Image 1 (cartoon, helix red, strand yellow):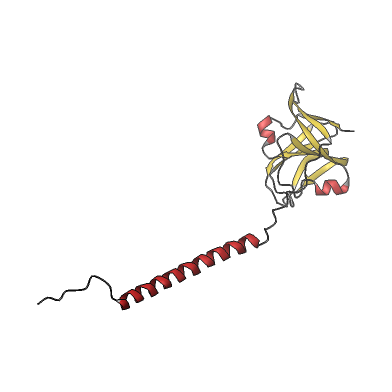
Image 2 (cartoon, rainbow, N blue to C red; image 1 turned 90 degrees about the horizontal axis):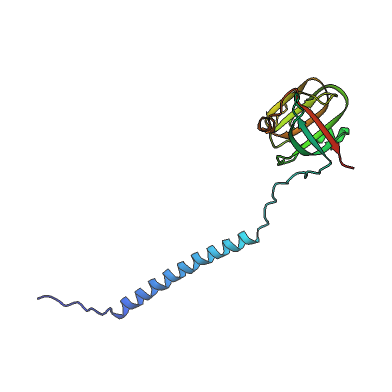
Length: 185
């Protein structure tokens, strides 16, 4: 003879099911509390400082690159000028960017062989060496950032212009071309 099972749970089974439900609910609440607590901790944590943007560009004049044969304008840019020892030493250090229409003009004390490096310079540069007659002697193109490798002139340079790496190739600036500049008052 077959016994018939009771489709209704008995009191003990109901209690056990209720205890299991409460345990699940407790675990769910604990997990939710951990997630909320972690979120609150993340919100309350101080934010990491952003990397310093470095010095900002200050327009102190305008410079033109001119074709060495025809005198035709190749490109005009705004310039920041460095003409004292401290300014020349700092140069493009700590800067994180330079616009295509910006550059830095270094005016040296005398025309002589010059050499630059990229200590603490975070962007690639074209370094343009110019003699006292404003003719471009040579260009060190796309000099890699943060290198101490010397970047020398091939003659006596009185002026040095730094522009973003690739600028000279983009605008057709080459040795033998000339520069002309005017400083702001």
